[in-house]
Image (tube, rainbow, N blue to C red; front, side, top):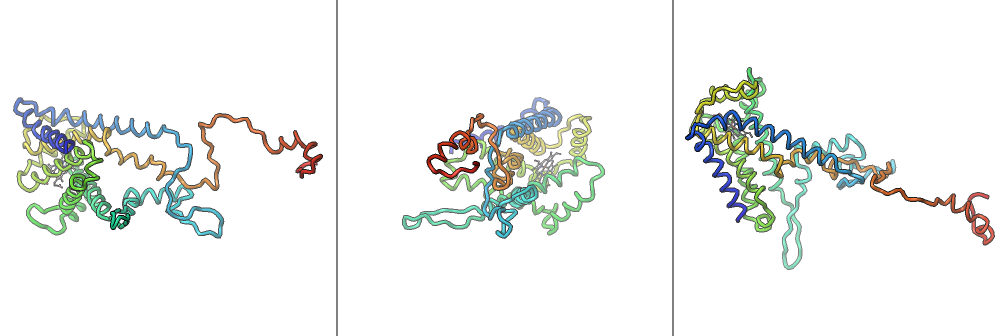
Length: 329
Ligand code: HEM
């Protein structure tokens, strides 16, 4: 409970920050300085952590497999569940990234009459997928603020997302989906005692920060509309490196920005790095080819070996004398 409380307080402080700054005439810190600082933190931190992981030696093939590996030609192998080559690894990784393949296999265990009983647990997979896909769609839709002219596919994506035309302005399906996904992910950590026990500040803070971004976005779209022309001018100013004079667009918009850029800066320091880390996970990115190729551990100290050939050369006379078979006469 302590971790939930601290992260909630941290998020509330961040929500109050833009209003406090605008009261002393420092809105520019949020609209013109924070974006660049946050993106610098994000890029440098992201690259740094990836390089750190990439530098770790991976001496063995430790791919997790759940299918028949490639061996003799007449034994049917499973190229995706136990990839033996490059393409198999790519196919498996793509399933992992786009469909959360391994999470689909998530199981639940409960003690029934003193015995562990395993069952299927698909809710985490479903809500995780819902959350990540809707997040991606929302970010892609936001590109309308950053490009001019707006690419037709962005308009098409928004139209598809608002297909059911519920309400005015239309409720986007991705907005409803992300709320469902986020609520599940948060409640799972709060309600399930085992999850609560292992959850840290970073887990709650990331979820609450994203919830803050989504809530302020929805507030702007449905209750406190922001001046979208001013937003576009501001966003175009960022990407063209010609920042515009900060305007008081709206308090909710400034909170939205504050949450987003703190999230970006926080990203490399947090578990959110799983987005990049997945590609460097040896259990996922290695081919299971140990039967075809000998992988030598680069850490092995050089060992002086005595081969059988050398052994026989040394003892041939004695071996023959005692009647032992020899390979060379
Ligand atoms: C991590 C990135 C972001 C996320 C997850 C996010 C999330 C959201 C969500 C869920 C909404 C509700 C409506 C919708 O889905 O379009 C929204 C609206 C909005 N967001 Fe963001 N946002 C992000 C970045 C930004 C940025 C960088 C800006 C500044 C240019 C921005 C400005 C706005 C505005 C002006 C609205 C209201 C749009 C409208 O009235 O239709 N957002 N945001």
